[in-house]
Length: 300
Image (cartoon, rainbow, N blue to C red):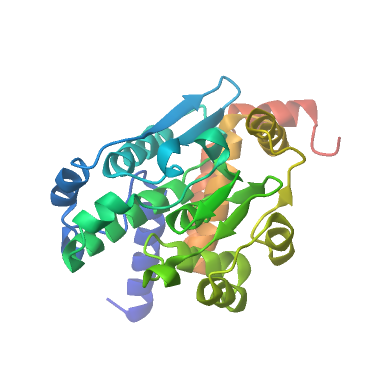
């Protein structure tokens, strides 16, 4: 087989794998002991990950552990994986808002679990587990928004980067505090942060452990805008109104748009083009396309 043909086959395979649901970065070939780490995480309970799905195709995912500023316990990490699987199979979904309970976003990992699982192997397994889950979250065929109320610290700051957009409320902050813990981001936050704000700004945020308020976040491109209200209920309504601008229309079309953008971001050009072709084929001649053609809506 020629080199050119081999490269073509490889790119085609990548694009097809990319379109499959639930494909993870790591498996046993990478030394990832998923079942073992799940058993250990199960020992550290508390909090919950709640998901509501509305008839308009907008889901709301709530990080619910307010006693610990919505820090992730072991069982919350497991529940997040389950919620992501549920969202991957939500045929009518169009958008997702992620926020924390009681007007704060998330303070990262529960330190009780961190202290108990301090071996390098446990650390690597947690890292791979959360990277798998948050990568699948980022790749969801839904337009996702992190609603940052209060503080998003450490792993919580990383979590915001797994969403397509970030909206902040007055007085909120995003802060990558990993350096102060003797660490670097391990949930994929550094790689995603570079994609969002560029390597220079990312280096400053990580090395300075800087508090990023809404004004600065908007200035550097980390956040889209500052919402008017800091009230928990009202700001969630404002986030829903913001997201509604981009989720009007048939769910299958919104999902297809998100898929082609994700392919363009993550795949090399040839593989991205093939993925776009395959996704295009799922909507061409479909109900929404035929209706639009019949109504001549293109130029309206």
